[in-house]
Length: 186
Image (cartoon, rainbow, N blue to C red; front, side, top):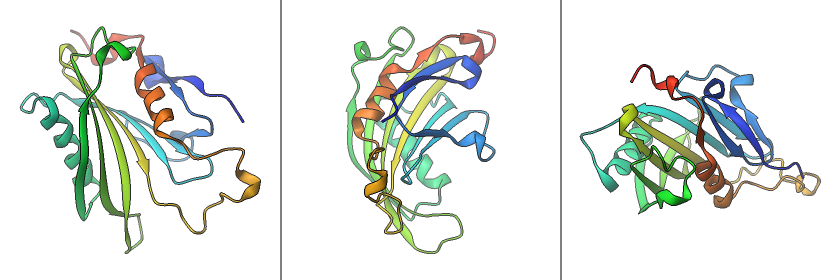
């Protein structure tokens, strides 16, 4: 199994530990400048790191819910259901020096893939790291769609298991800022 690895994000302004089998989606298709998107080599799982404008009008747990519902709206989710919202301990984050509050949310969204009519329940785990001194909300999302019956998880591919919540936690806690100039002049 290939090891987890530190990976530069946003032109090296950040780095984070990615789980084994992560493919940089920008090598496959265009990705917005404020996002880094990775997909699992064998499953439909994905990890997204987004730099978003700070939503100062919402605080605490409501900020995590706001971003979850916003993602659901952008994806055209038919239903959006929050299952749990919990604070993240700042001392566990590599970004603890500039992160004022952090939340983790788990929920489900009923979403249809592009060019498909049938919507599926997708489990989402999100971490919201709030960086008010940079006017930024940093949103990390772990998409876990239901297993596809046509998926390539046969015995020959068990060397690369699906990602776990532990993999997502490692991404969140390892995220490191190297160049604050990415946020523009302060």
